[in-house]
Image (cartoon, rainbow, N blue to C red):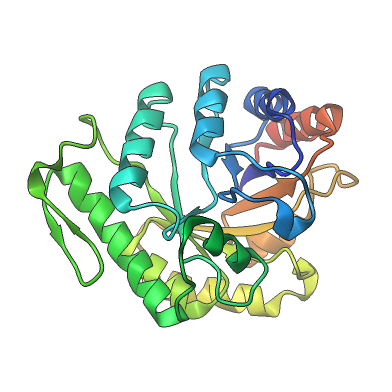
Length: 275
């Protein structure tokens, strides 16, 4: 079982975010993720941070931990821009970068309210899933130096975007089976959103785990469940229930003000437990 921290950028000072990342790096955490939300008004906060700028700073102050965006909204930037950001980040943290991607929020939802700020119009879920699938395929083609011709996306073969080296593994954020199946077919892992459910009562979440595992066909495939970090629990939250349901990673969200001491203590216990 791997344990990751998901850092909320809302009303968080960058030095404090870096302190949390360093604490995770020296402890037993496997990865640090950041959200892709450029506005904080949807959560009644005052500001947010650019995810890839923040990840670059985290890469510069850490040595071991993996890092990525959970998840980069395919509506916020073209795959060329995402691939460029990932390539640059990989040069700062070789072998430590994840590519997290998501289909974005729907019309009328809380985070869908971000779209007017960049002149975007929320689309139906089927269109958003098509864009997600093509973004995954396009990023792979960019890394191979190939052109990509899709329904929504087209990129020339001579794009010259990424540095030499393997592409980062791709993880899809999902809360439905339809999106999780895109991950099972096209990506290296899935992150299932479960923060609104008690895991001990999370049959819906674990049903998704079973179905996406079956769809992945037994190949190496990362299945993570996303929930809040429980600072009262010695390991940051339930581990046994997740392991029993074939989950191999948990991503635990933490918000400012950050309890650095507790993060360090939990990380130490994870190391001691071999988790």
